[in-house]
Image (cartoon, rainbow, N blue to C red; front, side, top):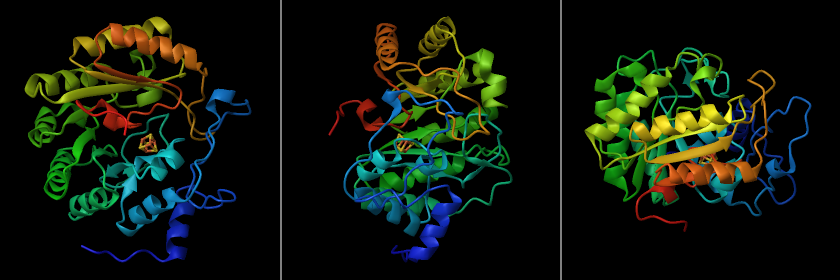
Length: 324
Ligand code: SF4
């Protein structure tokens, strides 16, 4: 498959609709994420990140446009986008770019999603092949409008990547509304890593995660581990939404009790003034301390830091893989 690249003007128009800018300053021509809103407060110095040098990120950006693929990097306005794109990596977001849930932290558009594109698995596999990825992370918008929540599409995407490349596969799925048959279908494709984020502590669920259910998310992780113990299970939380330390440690204990192997902890950043505000900027030293505590609790791999996202350097959590 050799899809035609988009015209420059067309690509730039799509960038604008995503809140991306090509005017990244001298020497930078890749898109950059919209700066997180700090609601008039100054960001602490540890949250200021220099743009990487060179134009490597533009290759990734153009390839994704040409193959008409969505990434959570762009749709969630991830602050790591310039770094990850310049390393020719991205987290693919399948099943469209419109979500059916109204989560207060998330920048992805919500509304009525478009039909599922049957050729998306092939386009995704092609991107993984052309980027030369050794590890691919596949996530999706939440598709509560579909009977299986999009599980069959996840299944097809995993198989397509497997057939076209040697890459290990990580999925980051929604909760499928507790439809265990849907979870089972994803497990049948045997991803190397199954990630499902609890995102925050249960007291904040109503404000942060809308229709999600904390116990359901824990049960999903336990289901995957019981069904396929060889699959690495993983979850993550955003800090700074108003959780207490005690609440956070209780969640970590719950995750371990439900067979969660790997953990990510990162700073929540409000994508805009219309999203939940940041309650606290957690200092790097506190992230490091929490990471140490989590390791002592038995997590096999922990990534904890202000810029950690569930897919940030995800390859390093695959058994036998280390930083390149
Ligand atoms: S951390 Fe994840 S979501 Fe953010 S830019 Fe990197 S790959 Fe994309």
